[in-house]
Length: 200
Image 1 (cartoon, helix red, strand yellow):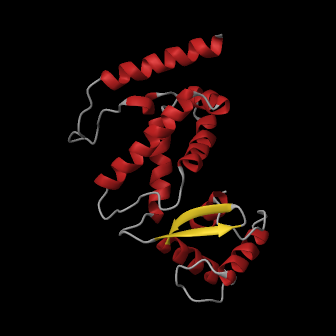
Image 2 (cartoon, one colour; image 1 turned 180 degrees about the vertical axis):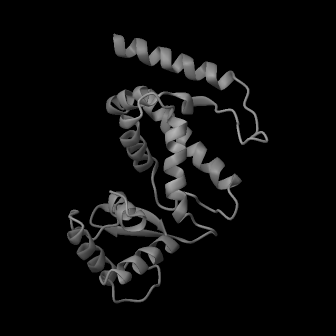
């Protein structure tokens, strides 16, 4: 009952926040934040564990934030070149544990700044990568970056062509084994974050 009451009160707070006016950045770079980004980290953490409606609402808000960042960040096609909403939520969650009173917006903003270092500057064809039953769509440019990183680490001897072939798969498997990740050869989110951002 307490969870339902808390969920209802948070949803009400989000509804009120959505009704508040938002302003463009002023001459000091300040601006209004709207919607689910105002949820405190402690609430986000609890609702993420429950996989509640609030958690999904914040996830949808994150997608909107990424789209807005793509539209308003200079020289950017996609600021999160491979990162899924679930990966971003997991990283936000990890940081929220350290900052329970911070609003989700502040934490996501920092996470997106990190992800944005690897943003795509121009459109890139998407490639379906399939390994067994696992499938993911990745930009060709992301696969080229993966190949470059693997080549720089001595794992990949092939062409930097943005294709997920047997050579790329074997190189990725070798990298994963060296990084103490499950050596599947599949470009999962954790592998891509570690390889492309040096994250843990």
